[in-house]
Length: 405
Image (spheres, rainbow, N blue to C red):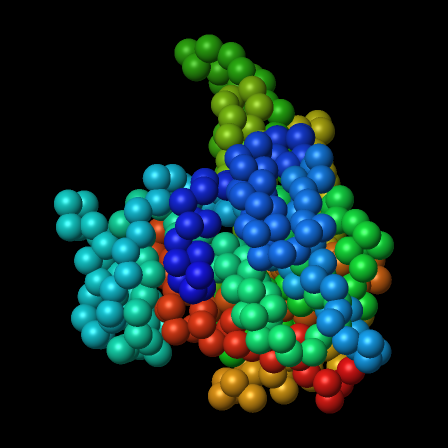
């Protein structure tokens, strides 16, 4: 099966994860895709493919040579972001000619290069898009499709390779993908997450990341007799948010610039909660950003003379650069594979994170490779078929490269 057909099968499975859930995986529908992937891997002849009770899919294609070659892991995640609807996904493939793509004529939704200039790189290519009402799910079902197709191609070629370890994780989009990943069972010497963006992207540094929950407790009373008595938690929450650095938000930052991002705000006069994410490549600046929240709460409570605001901070993952710098051969192997496939590697920092960040700190060095997708977490997400095909070739080259064994 070719990679685009395989991808279209996968995106038909709704797999959104859920931040509020305390189960593993956070949504049962992820396990439906996991079960399908196990059956597909078994059909390729990988007899040890399995899914554990937590929804993690593992498989290993044994080495076909007595030569001492590294065991290389390939990892992607099955869930999609809660940032946009995951169903019903209606896809179509268009030959992009540079003019706006009408995603949904009835609703007047179009994808154009003015708002999404990355499109300019793909004139003359076949783009998979949705109808503009859901995300596509290339993050990261494209990565899964590319891994499975590459393994199928590797088996058919008969080329020499070491052990190929395959892992598909749940709940990456809510920062839990590596929580229950069994590194020892996985068995790889090092690995690659196939979870990046446009063709050629190669990443080994990412944000340090934390989640911050700010709770504002107010006092409700009838508005007619509220003077000097009411403490409106909603407006107090707005005041707290205004205390944070106004320019340090995703909409106004890029490259190595960090940010805080208000993901949601819910509540009423009595109680309002705000959930933020905090990101920075610099560990020092990361710690300073978290400390700013604590200091803001202290000042807020001092102003009002009571502990109206509480702040809870939970670290999610750290910048894997400090680990990968000790294992640069992993990056060099991917660079060489890209060049042999006619792709110019573009080493850039991830303005986000991957399972590989956590796994690198757990003893599994794990740089990140492109999937070819663009505009992730958006109703305007798309992916060029030609990029997916090229990434399949890159993965095969990584697995069969003997120069850096």
